[in-house]
Image 1 (tube, one colour):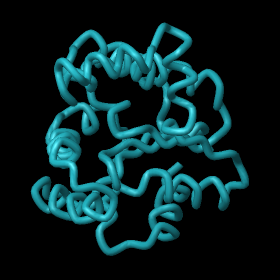
Image 2 (tube, rainbow, N blue to C red):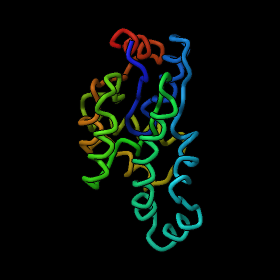
Image 3 (cartoon, rainbow, N blue to C red):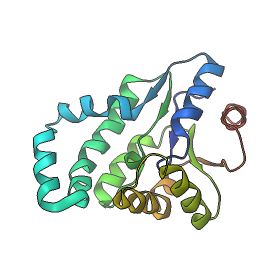
Image 4 (cartoon, one colour):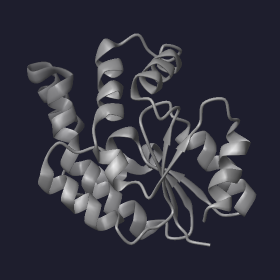
Length: 183
């Protein structure tokens, strides 16, 4: 079995839920990037005050750009710290517009064979529609919907993933079993 097991994908793809199921079935820890990311970000100078100032001046897109170097660093750090675990990345931690940041993350992830992209469907538009419906239960922020659409369409996730699992119509337990059988 190849550990860690890494789950990537857009928001509301089921990464955390499936990650918990896989971890329970394998009796190993599970770590969600969303729970630890800010401690890693602060190691290299992240500031909530700076984030807020950027958000006020440049809006959500400015904040998103501010996060990217911190996200790339967090990928390296979580893999150093959680070597024997199921790790679910935040949606942005596997999507990079800056080619240098993408190449850094790609190099960091290259040795890991148990790297799964979770998407509802092979059809991008169908995935976007399904994820939009799930996100509507959490937010009505159009910036979030657009960002998630970007995460689905951007090539980073597909390039980084060693395997893609389509989740539409499957339970979290079924998806977890599919992952376990393929590692």
